[in-house]
Each structure stands twice: as structure tokens, then as C-alpha cells.
Length: 319
Image (cartoon, rainbow, N blue to C red; front, side, top):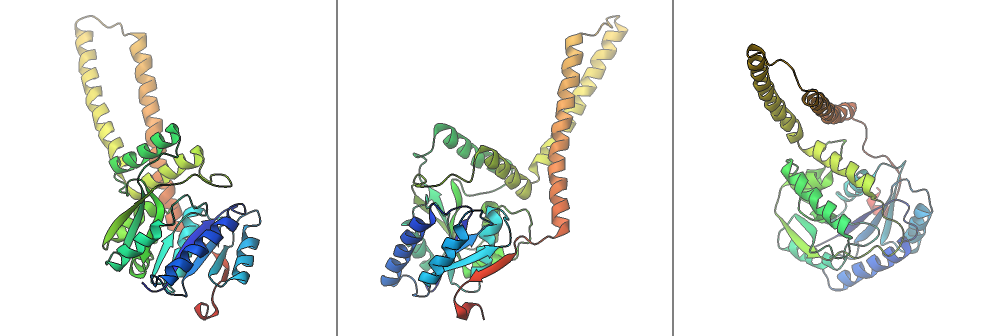
């Protein structure tokens, strides 16, 4: 492999950056000494509109050591957009890029095997969790359920894979062809194609700071992924609509039989249950359809997915 870029989105990560930067620098230096990557490989931190001292720390790291680069977005654009900003900046400068989170819960020692897979001809190498021992029962159950639900609803992702992956320059250029405003990279990257493989690792606990993905945000992320990648929920609503139509015909026949046999008194319970059930179903259906209409609305605006305010890189890369 030639030049490797490690791309790390950052949002309010002042507590973890000193340790993260030190560990990553040591890892890249070790890889350089082993001749696995070139000496001009870089670590790129993407500041996603942080409200703490994250950007000041990134600037200080860049001034101290050229191995560190920084991208400062004009405002908070969200994790997926920040990650894309880093990857799109790196695509013309590197031979491959590895994306990972700033808290380094993803084992950086898996980078060695990713590079080996790349040298064997893989354009995409996914980091996949081998176990979820560090997760609580609730987190483990909901996370695994998330991947299974995504698959059932037609949004194909790599099971137990987040955003820890290696992508070759060719794969990055392929990713650049996707113009979605509603980004869900875990589902888009597999669509790029090319030869891929997986590397298994155990995820550690976060050593400082707070998780940027509480339950509410995780649920929102799941909905974003499903509605961005699959139309199966709408097809399910259509199928459910046909089913209810058939049931309504059966109820109509039943009512006519009751009428002609003189049994016309209807039960209050049946009426109430029917009204509430159908009303609830209609509201859910409208909500799902509304999600898709909202996605179409945002896509038609064609707004920029990120705006880079400043880039701290090598002088030769900015010419």
C-alpha cells in the first residue's frame, strides 16, 4: 500500500483527542516502519461544528506534527456528512482511507489486517464486531435487532458493522458518484460494489467523554437508514391495505347476512375496536409515507451535504 488516510469525524471530542491522537500516531508510525504504508500517510480529524475546544486541539496537533490534518466544517452537519467530507477530501490524495470514530472503541490493531486484505486486492474491508461483551443487555438486544430489522425491510447492511472500514481510492471515487442528501453510509458503501472482505475485532468501552448516540438518536438513525435505502415499508402498507380491503368485504357479507336473518344489533366493542384499529393504522401509514415524501423534498432541494470552512493539510495537497 502507498498513502493511507485515517478519517475521524469529531463532535465535542476535546476529552478524547489527546489520547486518540497519540495512539493513532503510534499506530501509523509502526505501520510506516513495517513498510506497510508510505511515510506521507496522514490522520485527518473532521471537526463537525464542535462547541468545545476540539478545533483548537486539532490545530495544535497539526502545528506540532505534519501527520495530523484537520477539516473544519462551517457548521454541525451530522456524523455521516462529516465522515463523507473527510472521505471526499481524502479520495484524491490517498491510495486508501480508513474511517473510524474518535473514541477509538474500534480496535485500531485491526488496521493491520485491513491493509493486508487491501494488498490482497480488496477495495472495501469492513470492520465487524465479533462480540458485544461491553454492551448492556438492552444495547446489545436493540443493536442486533436493528441490523436484523434493516435486512428484513430491504436495507442491506453488513451485520454488526458500523463505520469502521477501509476503502480504496477506486471505492471512494465510486462513493462520490452517489448524490444522496439523506446519507446512510453503512447501506450506501455496499452498493459501490468491488471486491470486499471483513475483519473481526472486539469493541472496547469508551475511555472518556459521552456517547454521541443516545437511544433517541439511534432510533432516528434507524429510521433514516430504512427510509433512505428501501421502499419495502411502503410496499408493506400496500399489502396491508389489500388485506384490510378483503377483511372489509368479509365484514360486509357478514353484516348483510345478519341483516336478512333479523339480527341487526351490532356490538359496541366490535365497533370501537374497528374504529381505533383502522384509525391507528391510517395514522401509521400516513407517517411512513410522510417520511418518504420528506426525503424526496430534501433530495429535490439538492442542498450541499457539507461545507468546508478550512482545511489544514500538506501544502502540496492544497495546490
